[in-house]
Length: 158
Ligand SMILES: [Zn+2]
Image 1 (spheres, rainbow, N blue to C red):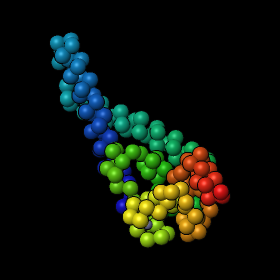
Image 2 (cartoon, protein in one colour):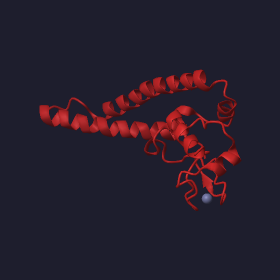
Image 3 (cartoon, rainbow, N blue to C red):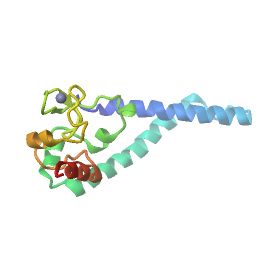
């Protein structure tokens, strides 16, 4: 299942709303006013998430298009409905519905990343990911940062 965009948006609004409500409560109890109402907080939370989330989403997608736009694997990832911004959000916001797109090369149970540690047989936990390379090739996974990728390759080439 893909990361749900509307669900993520709602969840982010609820989280921001919770923060705003806490701040409003502190402000109101400190000043003895009822300046910030829950309705205002709700509207502010939605606007905040829409505004800053929109900017972050734009920057992430433009950035990834500039960096990886010609990478065939990235193009395939986009064609499959992948979104680098939504897919990189913490699971607390996205509801933890990351799609398990890959299979453990040893026991075939689903794993999230192309190079991963298998949750069932534990393959990859000792740093040996050779079987993943043999199955999925030598291209850097788009969802992996460069430093981590270099580390995996180093271990593999020992
Ligand atoms: Zn396995």
